[in-house]
Amino acid sequence: MLDKKKLKKEQIIQCALELFASRGFYSTTIPDIAKSLKMSVGNMYNYFKSKDILASEIIKYISIYLGEKLKEINEEDISTKEKTRKIVEMYFKTASLKPEMIDYFLRIYLSNREVFKDSCEGMLCVNEFVTEIMIYFEEGVKCGDLREQDFFSAFGLFMGYLGGMVFLKGENILPKDLNDYVEDITFNIYKALSAE
Amino acid sequence: MKKKMRILWLSAISCNGNTHSFLNYPYMETFLDDFEFIYHPVIDSKYLLQDIVSKLISCDILLIEGAISREFKRADVSIVDIIEKYSKIVQKIVTVGTCATFGGIFRESGYKNTSGLHFDQEKQIENFKYLLDKTISISGCPIHPEVLVNTLYAIKKSTTLRLDGFLRPKAFYAYTVHNGCTRNEYFEYKVDNHKFGELEGCMYYEHGCQAPFTHGSCNKILWNEVNSKTRAGLPCMGCTEPSFPRQNLFSTKKNMSIPENLPVGVSKRAYLTLAGITKAFKIDRLEKKLFDD
View 1 (tube, each protein chain N blue to C red):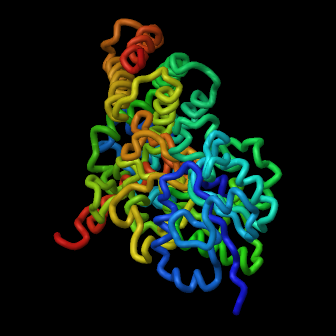
View 2 (cartoon, chains in turn blue, green):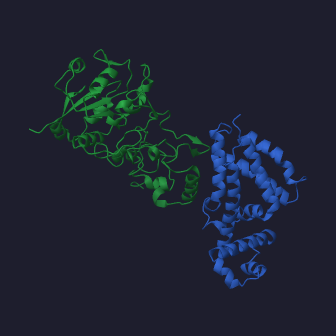
């Protein structure tokens, strides 16, 4: 029974994600999402009490998804440079296969802070993802590959770059496919962070 | 007249800090009703050091203060030979302080192969291995006098003390210094201290406090019965541990903002998850000064 409810919740999240990404957060309503899932609005509220709660659950869902992917990379016995490449690849792959996820993060989570201020204070809703990024940095510094510095300056550099590229792709500005940039971007990020 | 237990306090390569700490024991009179020193480097005792090394004076407990090297002599006799001689007749040996237990700061002395009685920092050494069953370690720089005295009473009353891997009585060393620290709430909610001596804030993240991974009772058995380092606003220096003294005692070694040493038994992933969550809280009460706001 629990699993069934969990599955339904995931379906709602996925559907809402797609609608938010295509129509925008404010112009998508709970009845729109219910309609798209052929559910009654009343039943929808059994799963999510408000649109803001749904919004927070979606960002948690994305954070868990990306966090798990990052954890797999972190647990591999490979160099920090290789991990850097894999993270860039993973992020771009997600942006290609599940564009709504990255889009949601960039266009809704980061741009509509007022929606998330009550239930997603600080990094509460992106904890899984940020934790894995922290582990990637910490292990890189510990083994001597990366330069010791404040976490946020490194985090901003890494994620800002990746987010920026995906944003440009979303705006159809990039002349080449996102994957064609993996090599150069890995080189740039690693060079900027490296201890050498 | 009740029988007093006879103690030999032997000073090896030492600054006598443990002796001075012991002199602060508040119930010394009572203690000296139950124990007597056949020799002590500072307290008046019946025998001279010369007697100790030239004869075999009967005694029940051997206390060793200071790090040990065969090269180091007392009254022209190697400290190792004195220990060997008395270890045969005593019931128990107690290493008093971190130097006698792990080598401590005097591992850096000019004497060759300086270490504790059984340990060279974390590593167990071969010398004196046959005395392992007789030894109790009381580490600390300096030792807490109550920990020493209570251990001696346990020996007197033949109480079995459960020991940890470094032979330290668990009754005093199973805890971390973090346990009982009045700043624990600041640690939980990641509110950092910014100035030594302030009552507010946790010193783990910025000032090198080692309390979450240091075994000791400093915050459970207070110093001079009133205070502890962390309560007073000084970080725990990890003085009961084999790694003492490490370099840069007042700064926290971090890798990309993550402390290298985490609380005992907490995995990095779990620590970061918890820290990420608790950092989201903004608790006014903990951000304010406790008194003069």
